[in-house]
Image (cartoon, rainbow, N blue to C red; front, side):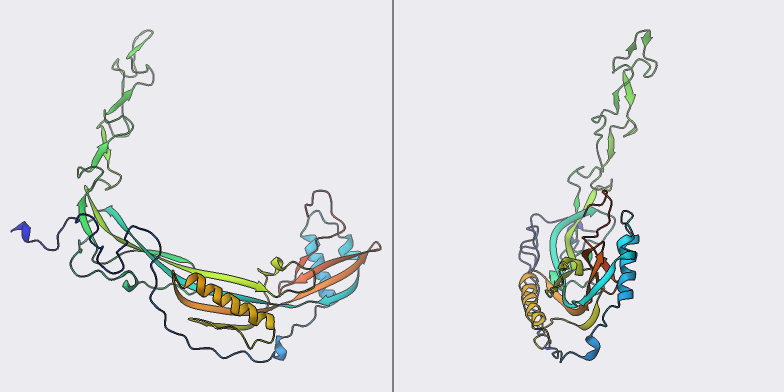
Length: 355
């Protein structure tokens, strides 16, 4: 059979054979590939006036005290006196809104790659390679982080391993290719005070265990297979980009305490692109919704494809509790559906507590 007639060619062509193929012009240059233009989504209905069920019942004094006691018991260096003996003088509700915007994106990047040849089909030139954004990839669950690395179809070719030059072995680094190392007992002299070194039989040499005295080891690059499969590797990254905003409230509790707690979900919408909540009863939510949506479009749409956005509004319960203990007024907060407690000025701690 005439080997010159074999098609496609088995071995890798020189330089970059993809420089004229759309999507692969800058292969190896790094950076994310610009996504295709998205379809325009349909605007969602705007939320109406605040329904009654959006309100959160005020926290009772008994519930506040119970949460306070549990909080104190979880701190080994807190005395139970204030929690058990303190007199609650007032309870104030400072419930506030939290808006969360999530933008689920897909980014794609390409680079030249190679691996030991294990009999795969060399399909380069068999037909045109799909452009990076045309390669079919299964999307994971929405709003979850995930990464896939894929061999782009019709970009694979075979080449001789450039490290071992197609031999499959390389010189042993431990013995510098000699197959032996100086005897560690006589430092390679072959002699001891009483005559020949018994450990190396007077040769001054130790058999190299790394290469089994062969002077060569299997090539790590091709794993001894002598050839490499070269191809374009497509890296696909899915990321859930999230921003939270808590509407300012006057309780005195720091806003960063409210990012991780649960609240009462008032509104949620998920689609390719969400719109500002202009009809929301609280103007601050409408304003921050508009700002975050613009920021996400500006930040993510240029380098990734936006697959889905989700916008959620929660009502976070916050209760400020003033209490008196030993003639002094103190404060603690109960917040979130979990009834978490914050008491930074707890008046009965031992010296090991760092506030």
